[in-house]
Image (tube, rainbow, N blue to C red):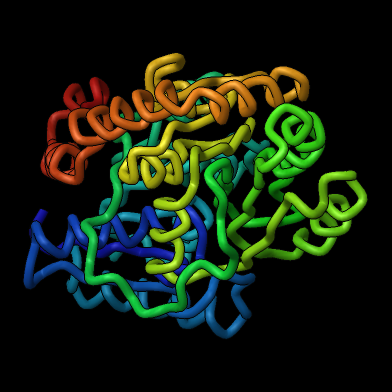
Amino acid sequence: MHTPLLAAITLHPTGGGIATVSRLLWQVVNEGWRPGAQLLTMFDHESRPATFIEKARFTTNLSSAQILGRTDFIIFTHLALAKVHTAVPARSRRRYGVFLNGIEVWKPLTASEQDTLGRADLRIAISHHTAARVMKAYPGVGPIAVCQLALPVASAADGGDPPPEHLGPHAVLTVGRMSRTERYKGHDQLIDAWTAVVDAVPDAQLVFVGDGDDAPRLKQKAAESGAGDRILFTGFVSKASLDALYRSAALFALPSRAEGFGLVYLEAMSHRRACIGSIHDAAVEVIADGETGQLVDQDDTGCLAATVSGLLLDEQRRRRMGEAGYRRLVSEFSFERFRDRVHTLLHADNPAAVRAGV
């Protein structure tokens, strides 16, 4: 491969986890194939449904890059983007690979989506959990390599105000988009558990970072929970403010049930914070249960409350977990390891190597 093209929806910071993965991939591709690597995004601002004009422009640019021979391999960061490959004249189509992030390939796929996935020269899942779910649902799509994620290389912290609220010593941080279509993330369960947490730890604070169309409902639920004065909503914050929030928090919690990987756990681990995740998704690959954090059943609100309370009341234990999490991040999820995995996969011409994964 000489001139790869990375096709992404957006790289904007408010674009969510898939935008973060896209930024991570662009760092790797741009570094490894400079100056030949190319980037094509549907738009360069916040994540939202694309307009017809944006889709048409993206498809035209994708076709032109292949017809004019500007690239010999396309890396799609989302299956929905790969579907437009069929609009390119067959004789001009280049080889392509698709990153499989999680829920977008766990849901029932259309015949067109299955065909697009099956025709890909390379399928890369961001976790073993994601790969297993896709293979179970669609065993005929072909081999899926696994390339676990890392954090993008840190750039200079952007500007921004300090955290909007003063946090006490027992603040629990949650970071994630609040979308009506993503109610699996555990925001509701944390609110449901918070009265019991406050009963055990009176100064406990629950801090939600992020925004979305479900934020008003969650704010109303928090206000009616009986512990509303101990639940804070910051909205979307700058990178500098988010880093400050991580440093101020006692621990991180995202008891989701549908994370394809969970980059936010790595963010917390980079700040030496113990993590609470769930037993239902790829958190089991990131969080070493009982060592770097704890895994809970999202459906068991009592267990969630007891787990949060127990860690808040045991500072030495959560500090040990935070330090262990940082060591795990460095050894298992470094940018260098991710870069090497991607390079191995993109340079592999041997199907057996792709089938084995890295």
